[in-house]
Image (cartoon, rainbow, N blue to C red):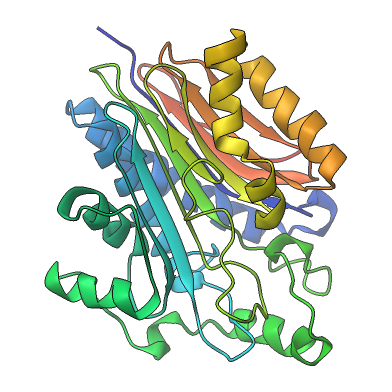
Length: 312
């Protein structure tokens, strides 16, 4: 019998212990624990890897500490535009949504796209029309309003610049982030899922790597499951998640070697900041980042919870 495992992240970036209060650190770690607990409960009961990563992501989307779901950042127009994706390593089925504005849990909609449609990626109003056919829960603007998030927008809206969540140096005590999860279930199957609100002050319906299968999310039982976090444009150009899978499949890299090659060498050459979490079918896990920190955690069957935030 395989030893099940779940790994989660809550974003990577400028995350420094010197600017983090003990109270805030405790809240972040509790959020990671909640996600790991939810995903692990699914796995312990013999549930599937896709069910486990979805359960973990829902916990993080409901937590306003993270840049996903309720805690999504604001666009230039003062809206919350969210992206999410999920992939099953057993059969390579995948579902994703981009630019949805009133979906309480975008990961649930991405799962519905995977399981209940012939498509992989649905965007904007069309995705929300599909959501209504699947009885997905909607929320109004007030549900997504987080004051610190709106303050982030006001600080840079007139500059025309966009801002990665963890690059908000003006609010060192208010770091939030994209969320992700990867899991290996008792049947030896892998899955990955990612959810985000994107960049503060983004315009023109911009979407990053999160909803793009192969860039921000990828899972294949033959290789690995990957969920990324960072500056999305760089992760798209480098096709990060799939590139790791390719190095394992075609060059016989280990998961560790592949993650190091892509995150610490290839991405750095591009100027890309961020990180990722990965699992392979043997249960090896990697939590890799080239930034100052990454909210991260892991729970393996029969072992204690492992949590981390800073570069340690």
